[in-house]
Length: 219
Image 1 (tube, rainbow, N blue to C red):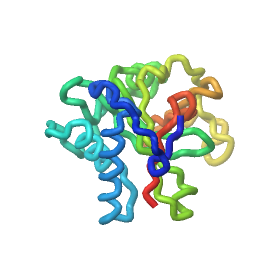
Image 2: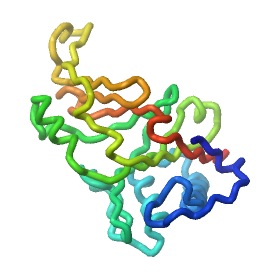
Image 3: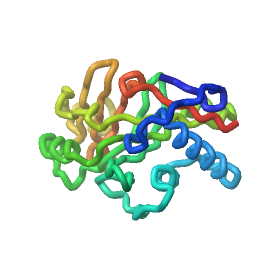
């Protein structure tokens, strides 16, 4: 489902506050106002700790123990009453898919099984993304896509993993330490970079698979 905040006339029913759904009008309104305030001061988009801070203020309006800058492997923010754990990501929208980066797997070792064991741990209950389409921003359209989905929609062990073999460069034809996880076309896939690029996990998800997005248009 795709909804444009500034065009919407419908008064959404407030659904169970503790579930923090994408249809929670108070939540959407609060995020929208904080994004507007951010851009009254900054021209730079909301990312990383700024997004964590905005989200935490909106789900915990009476205060919380959130501390930014930790770059922890677990949840970034937690709803104080329900204890729902969130991983806050930004991400890029490209061709009806959202691309996000996640854990660095260096300390998990070089073997695929150890990396899968590391990235498959129970880190959070939900992902909450504030993503952008670079083409829109280059046209002067300041818009953010809010995407919220359950973490169990991603199961890295269901992907078909293979070694990354470069087709050019000095390591042509050799395993560079990375891995590619292929999944169904209309769901998700993943990639783990090799040692030369921080061993980072990348996830690529179909927007329909994760339930669409809520579109905030600021200008």
